[in-house]
Structure formats: structure tokens, C-alpha cells
Picture (cartoon, one colour):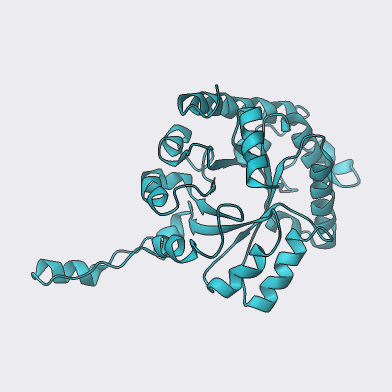
Length: 292
């Protein structure tokens, strides 16, 4: 999917909602377990209930790989169903791949090639540098979504370090240059690897106060923002600092939508939760004059 198509879908649906299909077989409603493929049936009903609201869907690959061959079949069935929808949606393989070039080449082929799973995008860990990311940038109208600033508690271990030595030297009157935080280095170094047409960045919603700094470095790239909902991120705060003239945001919500109910009415409850978010998104898009 081209960036322009994604923007058109956002304007049409008045939404920048991405639904994360973190479809844990231990949490899906019990009545589905009698189905031939319970996880796919769960995903299908969630998709059917929300496809007019969500612009993107993001299966978390861990929940499928964990089940071996059966899980991989559920993933294949899910992406094939998403590709069959009358109105296209943006698909994200939340795989967090990233390895030496030759390995990354095959990871990229697995998730992005039209002959394989054919997702529109895949999340990529950039720790091993440019050559580990480049294979994901070779597919036309596909995106590498690079991990920059995540929303988990341990993110501060490496992504947002404090230069204690520098601070101590400052106190002694010795001028030092404070090192950039790792997430800033990721954004700066990767900026020229691709373009707005084939790269996005993951920026955690619980770090909304840093979004302004993010936008100073990558003003127009799309950002995939997890952490709204179950992880406590504020949609309005994220939009205040993160929205661009084309929107530029995909806000992901997973557990808060797909597990809104564990009963037979799970799909309707998922729709209700998605509608709550979409209504707020529509208001934010109007305020930004992205839609009329």
C-alpha cells in the first residue's frame, strides 16, 4: 500500500486506528475452541466487526509462532482474509526482525514478498545497523517500521540513558557534550536509509512528552504508536505532538479492543471499544483540519 492510499483511508474512515491482533488462544472466548482454527475465527470476527473503523491491523507474530505450524496457518489465514477485504487495510507484521543482511533478506521476503505473506509492513529492530534494515526497504509500496522509542518499562535501560559522567563533570565546571539518547540516534542515523514512502517509526504513546522532539527529527514520517489504552497512553496528548498535515500517526490498541469481552458478544464489544477511540480520533482530525 502506498502512503497516499493510507492517507486516503484515514480521511475516508475518519480514523487512524490500528487494531493489534495479539490473539492469545488462552484468552479467546471458549466457544470458539470448537472451531477448526479458533484463532483465525476470532480474528475474522474482530475484523468483520471493525473493518469500517480501523485503517490497519497488526498481528503480533509471537502469538502465532508460539503455536508452531498451527499458529502459522492461523497467521496465513488472517493475512489472506485481510487482503481479500473489499476496502484495503494497511497490514503490519509485528515481528521485530533485524539480523545480518543475508538473514534479514529472508525475513523481509517472508513478510513482504507478494509470493509469501505479503504484509504491507514489518516492524524492524535497527540495533545491527543499516545493512540489517536495507533488505526491508527493497519492496515497492512496502514499509519497514523501525523501533525507536518503545513504551515498555525496560525501555529506559538503553533507549533513554542519562550521562551521569557528563553531569558530574558539569558540576565541576568542566564543559562536556551530553551524548544523545539512543532513540534520537536511531532516528537521526536511519533518516536517510529510506524515505517517508517506505519507512515508519515505532514511538511509544507513554512517551508522549518526547513526541515533539521526535517530530523535530522526523517531521513527516508516519509513526506507529503503541501504548494507548491498556498501557495508559493518552490519545489526545499523542495527537497534540504527533499529528501532521497528513495525520502521520497510526495508533495501536490491542488488548483493550480485542479482549473487551470474553463472551459470545466479544466482536460487538470490540466494535464498541473501537468506536469510542474512532470518535475521539475524528474530533482530533477535525481540530487539525485534516478532514472537514
